[in-house]
Image (cartoon, rainbow, N blue to C red; front, side, top):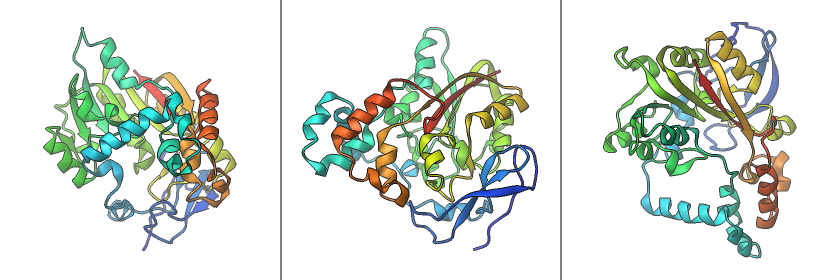
Length: 326
């Protein structure tokens, strides 16, 4: 398969150098190796060369979790395990290694959903209009789960999605949620949104600059944009640079990159948090040899790790949440 070679999205420079290489270890859609390069002018990291718009769909497996419809039994299973994993009761399962993959991957730091927080603050003043870019099937969201989905938000707000997956859009339609395939299909009549969210989707897009420009042009005067993405300067990526989700992650951002994009497009940074959780280390150990020593992590080890990671946000968390405004 042929791949497209691109210049830097931020500054346009064609000059770059390879900083990491990896094949698709996670979904095994190909044995081809992909490079992550660093722009020699602005230091932006991006996958290059990469699949083009006509072929990228081949690298999302058919049952890609965020594009699939909700299985109610699986939903209840996840909910119960999530409650156990984030309570003291999880320690009772420590002697039984069988439960490790089910519980460790669901341990998370206590981070409030910025979208729900804003909805609750303004619930008595204004019904929020929300656009979720890269919304998936609308029943589940990365990290925030079902309560961070459009299907949940629609109880309190007017919601709209933007998702390239036709399967996901069909699922959204069944939920009564309108969804556009791409941002350039959203008509000018849809003027302003109170909340625009990109929940671990900005790293998947072909041109981040188009999305920052869109946010600038479509965010309400007092609105917020919530961008959740992997942090390329996080502990995992700094110490294990080949721990990458290629080729479907096109861009590999750090905090500085987001600041530069925001400044270029006239947006203000309102808040930045980075965080980590043990599930990423445990899950990655199954696919990336450099992280294999985390494979034998016990529930108690993971519980201690999560407590430590919960204590404070630092700049080297493996994920980040950025709040933008005008």
